[in-house]
Image 1 (cartoon, helix red, strand yellow):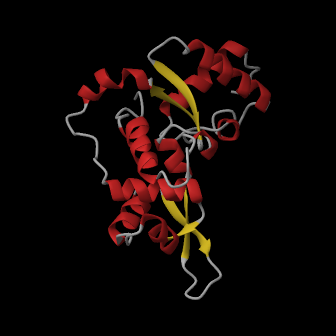
Image 2 (tube, rainbow, N blue to C red):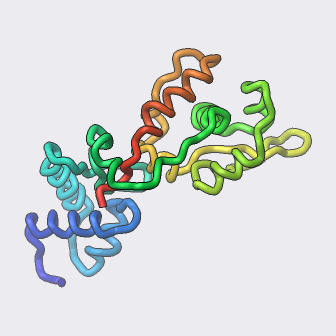
Length: 199
């Protein structure tokens, strides 16, 4: 501690910290924690992350940037084999839940009433509760209309779960009316990924 760190050691420290951390790590968090007693620039930490991404480019594990920072995770194309590690089956979500999640993701901020108008049916309280309990959505305000309904938006946990760093990485909508296609696409592209983390 306190000694000048060489680049190789910085890379090893960053690698170990991201691997050991329970949550994704940002450059700032690395600087404030593992490098708190060191004089090291953010640029050197970013370079170490880039070096690690190159190092893991051809392995079964990738260093991914998600909304909350960087984390190691198994490559998605390996999930057919790795899914056998877990005896629990991945949670199946109803079409109604997936449609609601898709509407919130693509139209946020959005009220429950607006979701119901698009879907043509009422949104079950259980769906909103499930999405909130998973920390995939949250109330971000209230619409300035009578009754002041809650406005819902997705969270960083939603992005992290689906290995996205921003909403711009969501699949493109073909047409606004194609809600069923959106729900199916989310189910096919993301829900089939049972492996979230290499650890």
